[in-house]
Image (tube, rainbow, N blue to C red):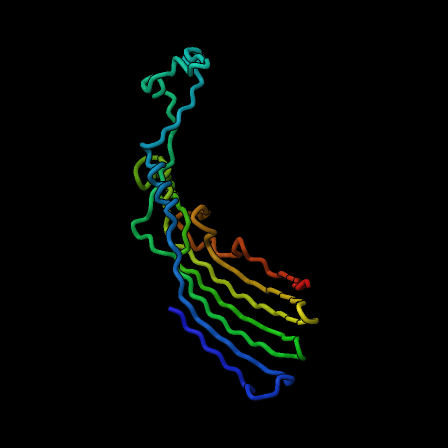
Length: 230
């Protein structure tokens, strides 16, 4: 759902008089959970993919390489002693689509003919942000929730990010076919997750990571323009 409203006083004023336009909007948006996460859980389920690190020269010397291919590959029984522990990937049964609540309010003022000043405030609330968590991390007493020391990384939608942004801009039409624009961005973003590949520092205290987000760039300045050639 999306709702927007606008108010423009002085519509009947002559074109050379300054005008002020106020706009506001509110939207609720949802992101899909990428199919890549499901493919990762299928691949790293502890069975589909295995890893072996062979350090015994007697086993390696059985192998020979030629244009016909590789001969003397060790059998699975021979490799069993060199099997490496695997980290399992799972999807949380309570996974939900990430949600974004966004509110905006803007004021645009015509200073002189061809020059406008704008101010925009945007408030964004991201809920159900994706992240990973080791659900079998050892507790403070050294015990494991699942009874073994195997790593189990679970994708879940338990993160959140809050962001406020103020955008100040000037648009100027210098002459026919040319335009100059200036934008200043002041941003403040705080959260406890940076996406499905990020892990909390303490899997048993998710609130401990609340702080500046990875994309918390406080100040940005853009200058640009366009020119239409003959």
